[in-house]
Length: 351
Image 1 (spheres, rainbow, N blue to C red):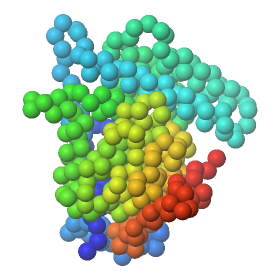
Image 2: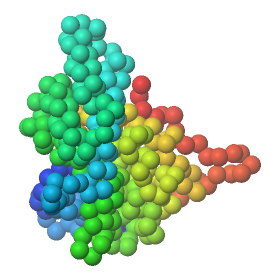
Image 3: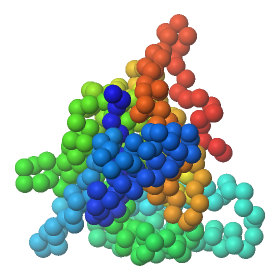
């Protein structure tokens, strides 16, 4: 019997786990059929299928309780700082993509540049002490500006700036390592425990999206049963000023049990900044490092997990890992030949 499949969701509000697993499985099955794995696709979507499980934690992001006297707790101030830095890096990455793009330098391009410049000015710290509430107000101003700019604007997922900020704030709340419950467990630990419960102490192919890629990377360091394949979709792991310095353990590395790691990104995905995981996250002892591959989705909402999953290039390796065809141990570095290469050049992001 092959490994199980575990999905890990990302940012967003409360959702129905049963609906989510059906939607994700359906999209993945569509990609599997396009990749020539119709039999496994049928097993995945069968009514009695037990091939996959869904690590759900959105309910843990219920709004934090307001504090008396209007004072902010230390972890709330940290969350505000992380949220501010997150917006700065997202705007900078979007501006860099715009400057490097192959679009003609016409009036529309110049108008887009002005919007990005305004968003950058809104996002940048002004040198004054900023409490958490002030950062949130600035974040709302940035979100309002960005939502007038494709590919941010016109998306049903973020119908209002406050929804965009609320979703991005989940990344800050996880990385702040605060918000303890009555038993003293911090929020990030409780989220990882949900993933460990879904893994069940067995080998598993893990497919993680958005913030879920951060959760999966950290949790798999404590998963001794092994991971034949880790797939990360629309990941913020490449955020060098916000995410990478706050990952645990430090320095960031591929979990020892991961046999293969594929990272997929879409150029129009506003959360997945251009990946540099091969340089930023160390390989494990077997030489396994992230291999980043670019996908291109239709429509304005490229961050959708189901759009990634329906890609044959994403679904094919998942099918192979589930069937056991890809469960070969990664080659260990040969000291006589130097370190193992971090990735195949063919797997690197397209310029």
